[in-house]
Length: 252
Image (tube, rainbow, N blue to C red):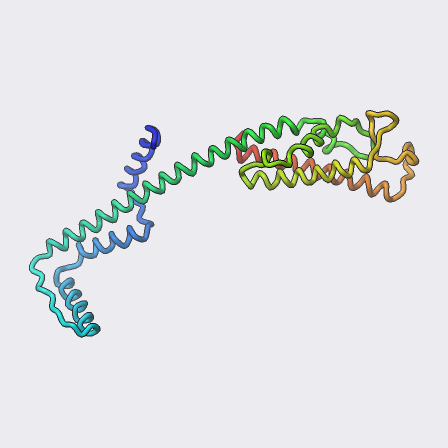
């Protein structure tokens, strides 16, 4: 059922429709046009049209019948006026159902947005833009060593955000989130495969011990470092774009 606010909004819209009716509906146009034609067409022309219609039916059916002479055009005015009123009523009823549908869809959209809004807040609590992991992705050159805590938020995101409970209901948000998750997962995997602790930790390096402390690295080490740096940049940019998109769509 409508609440008082919805009833008030609908009555205001109905008032506007009466003053400025929306006649875009084809049925409304047809009914009103027929009614207006009946009202505006002179009786003589109506008689000629009816006679032509009877003659046409007689020629095609073989069964002859006649049309009584029209003595008064008052019934036509009643019919025409009735059709025009019917068209306007149809227009109002049509607008009512469109309004009702729009209200329902808006409520459903708000409910979906609220679910996604809560999930986005949870995402920011796990993987915020000011986290150590974002700093690592944005600024770090993996030719240098890094602290193991630098991947904490990345690891949590990759390990826990690929479930149904972590899916956004809006596909426009879920698609870039999945892309971010996939790219972060690839980065975490490649980083784990290409780095090791220095001594007992907690500092890690991607440079093999045989070349650490020198700049004389073989090509495969340069290739590995470039791949990690490029992946880190991609992850950072996807994260930034996803956060901005979510804030625009969810208004938060």
